[in-house]
Amino acid sequence: MPSVDTHTWTFDVSGLVERPYTLTYEELLALPGKTVQCDIHCVTRWSRLDNTFEGVAVHLLLERAGVKPDAQYCLVSAEQGFTTNLPLTDLDRPDNLIALKWNGEWLTPEHGGPARLLVPHLYFWKSAKWVRAFTLVDQDVPGFWEQNGYHMRGDPWKEERYGGRGLTQHDINRLRSLSKTRV
Image: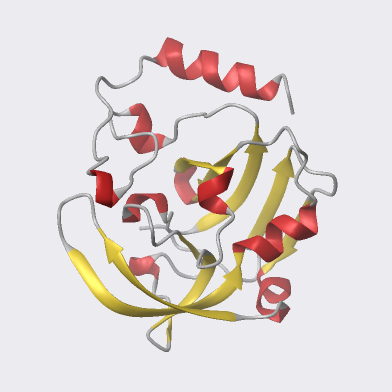
């Protein structure tokens, strides 16, 4: 589990945006807050009902950046090199947050504190712990678990747990290079 210093923590929004920017933890805390009541679902087949998360709306962060029309996906980055991918249509939804609190308490490091992505309509691996950045891209670039055989989207109602074979390093490099040439 990473040790995250909120005095040096930053959150970046970059890629296919008009106004890339970086926020400090204090700047993130100063943004308007939002509370979301939701259920969460783990790919290992457990669910936790009636959670209350507090944080900053993802929509607000994307709006501030001015997402370009050709951006269709987001590669979410977190501590220790963890990444996950999301279609922009799944990321930019009203209940999605950069979550700071869970059930009235600040997120602990075990649960992704100081900040984790919350995407409650998808399996919880898409709600990256220790989130640090959004990179908007025009190609669906697989994240850590997706490179290792997890589904590219992860809808619990469609049982989208696994996506078939894991990607080879060649597949991963090709997808990353395609995306980087268009940023």
